[in-house]
Length: 453
Image (cartoon, rainbow, N blue to C red; front, side, top):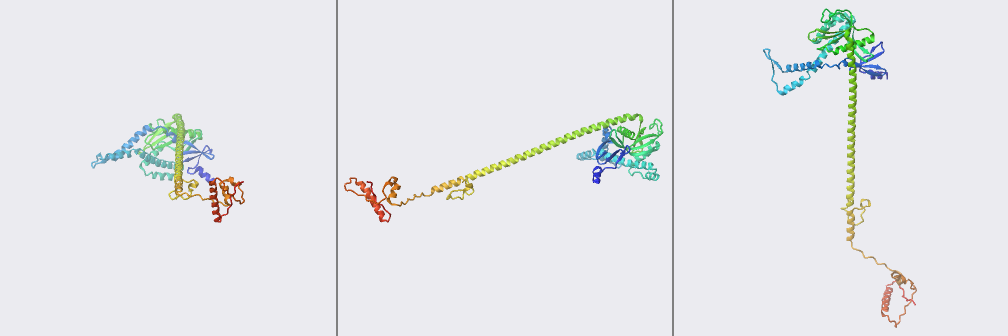
């Protein structure tokens, strides 16, 4: 668990740097180029001196230099040297020329990377040499003096640094020293801390002096920029804040990559206060700009999140509308199928109409109903069956006329008088007697009609 916590806190960072008698611990993240204050389990970013000073505009010198690098690259790519030593431009197509111009646009960046590599090599050799001096390691000094960097430009820078050391009787106290201001919360690395004497060149040292405690800073750039004064003033303040010692001079030494000469910028004590005030203003500006950048980033992030939410909402709404459209289409298709089934079920073409239709779950379609009606209407009509009457004339009469129920059920003989004047009645009775007699002859149970008294 302790190892995991250590890796989480300090994985990928350099070792700890302690200040103020071990009360303050800093670590450096080489990936993000930032110093981090160790505060319990938290790591708080601190401003770096070089980063703060980069806010100072250098375009006045850099833009002409970048244009010069582009022009140099173009002339190099377009020039040919004749056998007699004369130069002339080679013939190129417009497309080739356009490609050369586009490639030349990055010439300044290529040159900066090259110069940065040269500066890194020179700084590394100078640091090793100073450490050998501090360790009083004579053999190491001789080894380094016998093996300068292979790169000629870096080697020239080393020669220039040695020239400045010799001319000013430099006695080294430290090199690559980490500094930190607890008050202003910035950190950095000063190239050298030493004791310096004036040289014999009045252009370099107008007034003679001896044994001045000095902050020195090596530069391999082509110019001495004003931000270098702010940078060294910040180093001086932080060193004095922590140690209580007073720095008397600052030396900014430009090392010549081409001529191996040094170009010194000697800044005496009377310029310190103004330079440090300028650094403080740059620090405040850097932090203010950083806060503005964070605000802009937060706004942009909120805008992106809002736009993302809008896109997601629009997507969800589109999906909802599609889903509703699919459901509506399905409902319409279902309704259309149901309507079609009411008109004609799948079996309507096979249906013969012989039996009552039972399609569609008991709700027959129109086609089947129509078919059934047509088939039933085409059938021949059947005569109703006559009901056979049992029980003789009495039951027959009761069926034909319920009032005849008052007739006696006993067998009687109806006397017929010759004096009757209604011959038709006798004839209806006689059709009846004949009918009855014929019924008896057929073996059907019979009864004798009788008339009431």
